[in-house]
Image (cartoon, rainbow, N blue to C red; front, side, top):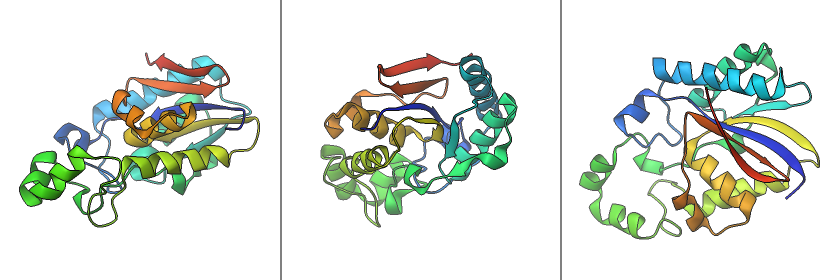
Length: 200
């Protein structure tokens, strides 16, 4: 992986997070708590890097990440128009199951759901869903394409963030299952490894 510094933030809480729905490539708005989380991330980030001079600001193009990125940038006193949307930062998709809860998926397609639970690494959800192996490979490809010395603030998603940290460590995709996806902390990925930074 190239030498880089990446500050990776997950979007704030959404309506579907509260409902425990698989958002994937579909979307739902930030809750009031999610808006407050985004502002808190911005304040914590400003305490670390000021206005982030010398950092590029990137976001998944999905609305929940973009809305979070805008709040973070505005809280830091940066112009949100400079945020770059990057397709590779999309959340892991559940295909036809995007937008459903686990209970709804199990009721709709119990055999495929059980197969997925038993093997997350080679069994993809129907309708173009991603395996965990595929999302780790996507994250690894994005990391490899970064220029040497890149300094980035990245606003993305929970599962993709776990995949990114897994790829950064060069670990097996099973590592994703051991990692969390907080909305009250973010991560610094760099030469010293991965550092968890609490918000607030």
